[in-house]
Amino acid sequence: MPHIQLPPNFPGIRGPMAFRPETTKPLRELAEILLHAPHSLSAGEREIIATYVSSLNDCYYCQTCHGSTAAQHLGGNFQLIDEVKKDFETAAISEKLKALLTIAGKVQQSGKQVSASDIERARQQGATDLEIHDTVLIAAAFCMFNRYVDGLATWAPRDPEVYRAIGAKTAKEGYLRPGGEEPIEVMGN
Image (cartoon, rainbow, N blue to C red; front, side, top):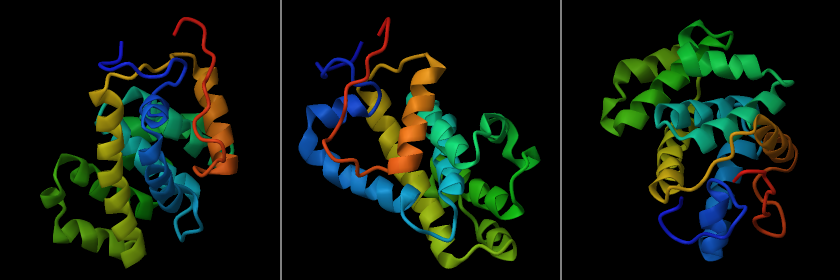
């Protein structure tokens, strides 16, 4: 049960965004820039970074939503998302993404954990300064998003089909959908 009265049928971050819509626009714009806008990292790779950090933070809603969005960008490969969350070093992803996930994981602990050798590893795998910058910012932003969701004890549906639908819509339309937050009808919420 949420710690404050949030609008019904708005799971995860959707509840707080519907509760305080004036903060929704800048949060959505940040997500759009970091995860969906054109970039040298694919949208799937950036969603994997968000998913991985959310899994480290044990934020069920965010890791499941962004994992679904990542899988949609990757042709429906949900198994890969599970493998990344379990052990990204053995997952079938690029060495560059593995190096960036190392950085993201350290940012999740503390920004000061990122070392010069972590940055060098990423550069040796072809990561640009922009990609390193945005990896750090995605990781930092998702620490904030995860704490926003879980700090208010928002509800998260357990039906995987809800997340598949959210992921498909987000992969297609991004984060700047007109009309604001939409309620989601879920049985047993």
